[in-house]
Length: 505
Image (tube, rainbow, N blue to C red; front, side, top):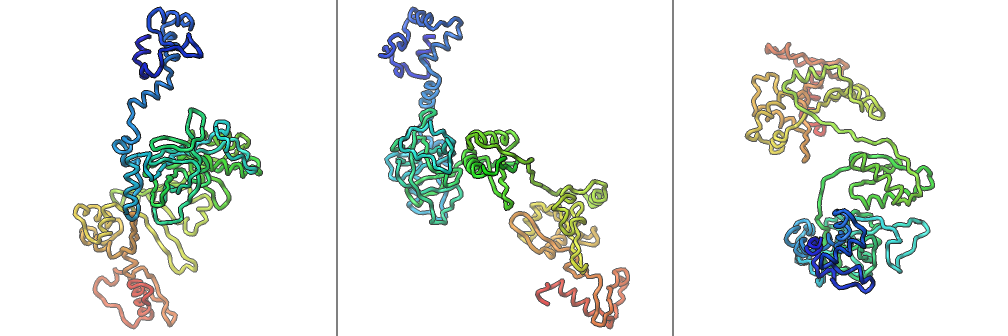
């Protein structure tokens, strides 16, 4: 036990071996076995574990030992900023580099409290009871907000000295440096003392503090600076997206304003929570999972709304997600299309089932007839491999993509005879049918029957005669069609419009 006391995480010089003036028999560290025996008799401990726990609790408190261990083994703030976390504890790059920003970035890496450049970053917000705040000048509760808690931003000072009462520019996480309209306001700094918050006049670089009156900005993270050339801190991007969404509303409609203030505090305190409002007036609360949702609802009722409100939640709202996949050959797709699998659920429930033409949507194909039944539009969705997308984007056949090009060419019937289809001919046909391509990996292709003008089934001539073009089988022997047939000129004109575009008619 003596060895555990003397070689603990705290050096012997931290706890003085001399008696404390307030308690002469309690503070001296035992130096001999007799001193230890007298101490054990006073503590009333019997077992070995209880003796060790009682003595170490008296002379080596866990909180002090952990804090001293962190101070002795952890890097200093300046070393952590410059060597261990240089990319995270750094500012985002501005749209245009300048010397002022370079000096500010260097000041953040140095973490010097005597620097004129002041930069601090608020990483999260916490709901604090007013009774835990030691500040005689703390603003009183407004008549509209009777909450007993306030929101404090937990910040780390990266450069310079943060002072109470000074004005600082506030940079949100999405600030890109293109706007000059940067909010600016005064702050109040507080020192974290366990569960208490004590107001102080200044906080030097490297320290963690709390800042009051930032919730009006409605930002989850804030970067403060005394210079307008600053940029937000890079920070971390965990890539987590809320999955479970519910509609929350108060049981008593008169408590709607209290709920809105509580939702604002919850979204600030928990960066994983998203709160949105719909055009119907719904308040959607999105969380990472069911357990996270239950905890958020409990905190919303008991902490952020002070337990003065009852909340009613809807069933979880789940977003639809779809994808596409290849079939090895066209026969597999036909068997899948002709299967007895029921249609997708969103095609039989409102409001999706009310969309025009949706009743014809089946297994990746959709056919809609416009008003007047003048024509029908057929759309087929097929997966577009990245390699084919790169070929269409660059408008040339890239080596190694021949197999994917052939697969897509056969699926879209780029040739009437698949045995004569080659990667180059399939690529030529795809480029000829390409109508539009975006930057997200999607492309819009016209069917050959459309851009070749063969989609016209009949045309009414000026004499009122209906012209129906002959089938390919009837003209394959080389017999030419008569030129004086009523409607032939109109048919050729419509084909030309489809080939060259309606705007050229």
